Length: 283
Image (cartoon, rainbow, N blue to C red):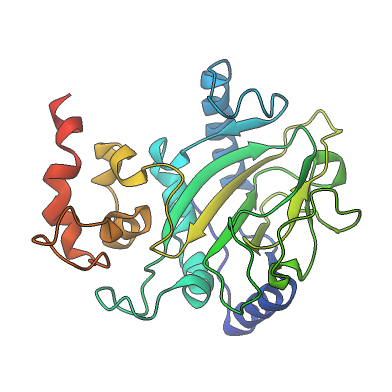
């Protein structure tokens, strides 16, 4: 059911070049219409199921947005989506840690920070998601946005200030100009989390769902406790690479007698499984 676009070396080089210079890049037709429609159906169902529930720290701030948090806990297909070969090729070049020796260098050692679905509502002022500005060539965090519907100007598409990822400045929330990044259904956008970005207000009544994944170097704190929040039945379906993506290979050791290295690799996942899921197993 999950069909993702494959890229060649020239396409990969262009994405990396745009990402480094502009701070963002696009890949058209990343997923086909059938996959979009299938994921869209899941997202809409999840939203309708929980739309009346209060989300502390979110519901009062953005009442006109539609959002579904923690997609990785809802259906494995969303983990498959962000761990496909194309995404891996791109992100290994951007946020892999070359000194993470307990995982082979041609495999991802970055982790998932957050995985949501969002349909625009209110205008979103310019901000950055990296928490800290920097002018360096190397970033530690990126966002992937996969459009499940058209996200054009009237659907509240993303706005970006090209090159701002290297400015070493915190965001000017009311920056007067920027570049719209419209996406057609099935397109993928990737941007450096240091970049100044926001969203236009949604004028259309149509849904404009996108799956948005924050992907980051293994040592960056995740927004939620993803390893301990993942349902055990989904955990059992994941590959070693996918378990590492959720963060199981990068958990801080409880003390020095277990290990003194937080870059633990695949082996530690099985060794820690009983403790990680003790509460879930007992419930």
